[in-house]
Image (cartoon, rainbow, N blue to C red):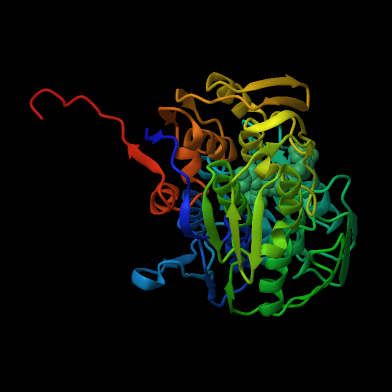
Length: 429
Ligand code: EPU
């Protein structure tokens, strides 16, 4: 298993370019199931989850061509023939977002068999709302041997009111509704930019959708969809991670190609903390000359403060003067990074869904363990300002969602290297 070795103390200086959004690319790839024609996706990040989705689609009979050379961020997916409407346990267990194929598969093939994802490090994360929504669209659902099977000759439009806001649930049902007969009105939908980006692709494919990006989405089902070409939006979570890194290290960092309109809540919060920044077109220049002030933060669905940036904000809070109360409202167990930050010298107390971070405490390099994608990012940020060397184990979590993070960080002055596990040589080998 790879590890990162990071020596702290360098300010981040220069320009870092933000990649395409993993969480927009994953539903976009699943949307290709809805048509027999090729779907060309640009700005696809080269991260592990995208490779998992490629394997998932290929196992169904899809042709997935990854671009190479200068076109290495382009992917062409052609689902002309789907031989197996199934997402197996082997892949679903490594990536929960595999459940995004449920809606499009049942819409296109009339049947879908998808392994149930189990719990994960950050919470139970059930998919009951995806299932309830599909039932509202007329799918018959059975569940056995760890698999969900959905069947419907043709889905029928209906009214769906989500009990709770769910991002992939909204996306899954949106993809189901576009080929359903008649009109579907979905209420209490997720308003994340990734939902709007998926709708933009589906509209290019011939779907009839209104209101994506708001809490009510109206879909008029069509008989068939066609191929399209679409550019994935920038990754707002990667951008937020670099913005915080620039501030935390006392750097002067230009975060380019980052869709600043998706960062309004983060930037408002950072302004209160005392971080200086300028927005210019598609870039944000962040200057972290401190001092930072403790400011409370609660995660919420978009446009609120993203749960995917909570861990990185906590790393910043360790370097702010005073007590910051951080409340996690989306997932019930998303403070695993806090215990590792404490091992590096942070003063953090967890009480249920609240963490109280008292700063400013010096951080010192230590051996720490990454527990999930965003927790890993928070440990990288802490390591960049820690005294001495930090070794982060299990960085495969970070490889799931950050494209070439160590190269990007090295490019702006961080001391970071990746080391692989040294296996003892076999006798005679
Ligand atoms: N929920 C239910 N039932 C459902 C679906 C969700 O109770 O059927 C609950 C969840 O347990 C959670 C809340 O609703 O408490 C919100 O979960 P949501 O469904 O919105 O999360 P998700 O769609 O599984 C996406 C992102 C996550 C991100 C969350 C919240 C993708 C592929 N994943 O997950 O991203 O944290 O929305 O914004 O889009 C990450 O990138 O590191 C990541 C975890």
